[in-house]
Length: 238
Image 1 (tube, rainbow, N blue to C red):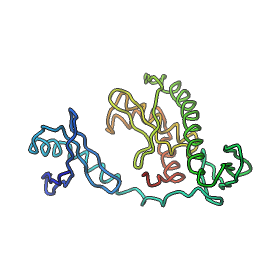
Image 2: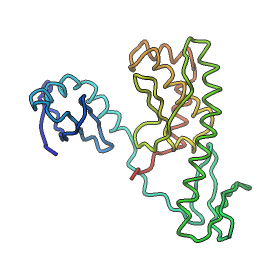
Image 3: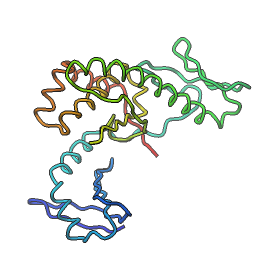
Image 4: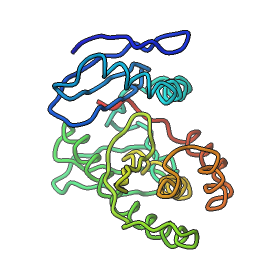
């Protein structure tokens, strides 16, 4: 790993450079606001710096967005009494020891049965991922039916990933990624994220045209975004 600096306007962009067997340059802004660059093995440093400068405006936007985020939450504890949110509703975790492991919701409590307390994290995380797969697939179909009226067509396939700074993403090839932690949010907020990404099928940016499209597809998107960010904070992702 090499530390370099790219001149940008009246300032500069410090970044770390890692060489990898890849064909293109990758730039990532971390949750701490640092810039990490992955470059092909044979790409000259001068060309790396040129490409970082070329992406300077995007990097600065990402830095500003990261700066708005609240500080990372402490790691969630998997013990009785801890608060957990599921689909927008707050539950109190109850961990009990039993032969048949599983999770059930009852009267504001999330009952977690494990063979031994050390398995609490594994069992609950597995359940949350399974629920995310099922719930997101259901919401995806609902959103695809709505988006079709605006000429937005997608396969409906997605992958889950625990992300620290994004609720979702869409690649140029149409690969959608949804944040696993969205399972803590209400359905209308999950729909907002999915529709937000579907709009990138036509506008692969956050331009004025993109937001005009999003406004037609989901007129109350700002309210949903505010509710999402108010109810669910992204935890530290290890």
